Image 1 (tube, helix red, strand yellow):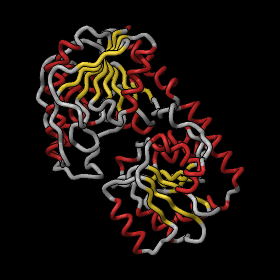
Image 2: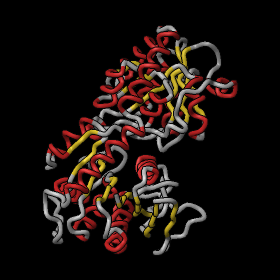
Image 3: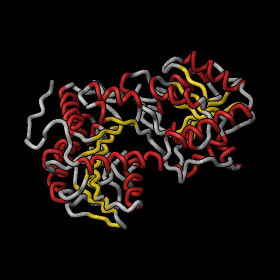
Image 4: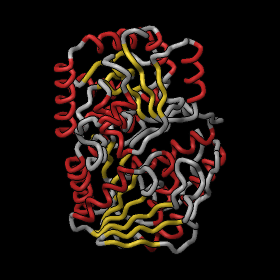
Length: 419
């Protein structure tokens, strides 16, 4: 097939799902054309060595990547972010009408940032069938920012129109399926495709002496959180839980983020000397660090928008056969419990999390290893890269064979109104 891919982010940005999908589809013999922006995530500034311009294409076997200019947000806020989204929609519309005109099917990786661009291209490309891949829904209020409501309504409207017009929709969690159907998608066109991880990196590995020296001080049980220290994680809950068990477990936080100072300050205030902070590490280092710890901690705050979210950390930990402690609700907790890959508790409840930390420390090492083995099996069975690409490829083929997409007709421009 000739497959078009529209994605707001793409490697070298940390956009593993669209990047690995494009590479795998090209390796399977399809002609793949990617339309994306110039890399600027997460800092909001175009990467060193890159310069935004209208004609920028890279080619490898069966894979062409065309980049278009967009407004870079700098440190960003609501208005700069929206300016970036709208500028990408304009650029994608100008270039995409010709660049993607003869593809058999268009795959759209659609977080909210891509909503306006996908709505624009659906109008311009006429009857080319579209497969949407939805990793998230637009919440009334983002947990890490503020919004006056008008932009949120416009984004929801743009996303809803593309849901209704798509030939098929892949969603990353079961709860997202319900959410997408609730806003107007045809239930028969929606399929769950759990996110995969980079299996070239995240796989079982022994812990070397350097990793053990970084993570462990003694034989005490170590729970490690690796990743962003931000508003969505709510790591203050973990700090309070660990502070209550200073003679039982060590909590190691690897990474950085907007809330790092706040979390460090709380640990100092509670005089919790069993909590340690480690600077952000390369993904290549993480499997050994996972192996040096006893459990991986997955945290999400108790927000409606996050109940249908599964952090990338979870498939990475499961792929590495690392047992998990999950302080989260919704699909994250369900996946851990169904796989019997660790322990879970309600989000933002430090006493419940302290109870799970204590229980985790009492579980003998062979039982912990068995949790990790079950998690690895669940990953290979339900989340693996080959399996996920198989499902997306089938949706693309069915859409291409089926011809024109159903649902709403977006061939004529329509005003998107805030509700």
